[in-house]
Image (cartoon, rainbow, N blue to C red; front, top):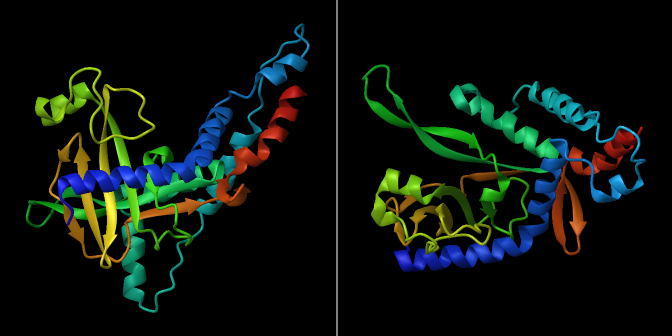
Length: 276
């Protein structure tokens, strides 16, 4: 396991490397979110529209296309390739229980609309109905903002099982961190925390980083805040990082692969409908 200084350096090096490859992808997704939300008139559009006509009305064709596609795929039954029925049944029960059932749908929506989603396996605390005690159980969740995920830029497998590093970032105000963890975890006003990201432009917003690192076919997990471990590092006895990319349609931006969804592909059609 890494010591705190080693873990912080490893995270910073990885974040820099991941950012260099993901910048176009994240920029496209942010643009597509705004477009799907109705911000479909840019300066070029307004320059060619007769100012005397009612303008800026939209017919949300793309939104309907995204929802109908997601609903069709979401209605498919789960399929497994295990030769053992008990394993298949256990998988289906896991995916249908509690919040686990929602995660694949949310990831599917992001994938169809914008071309990229991430799911992760963590844990949640529930009460054992037999003993009445609190126990931790595995939980599947979708990461709503893909820009908060840093994934190994050298990964090439469709399910990401070859990734050697990944990170999930949660941004919180210093007031929130102070209330949750104590004043000793914060920095003075206007002073950036040691553990941070390039995307975080506010010195008064702090980044809680969950950094995954494969080592000797096991997954090390480090939770970092400011300049220390917020939890004790742990080693998971699994042979992959528990973060799963869900990719859309592939295209190329120079030498880099970028993923796109219906919104990126259908922007021109949506604008033609808006002009009509």
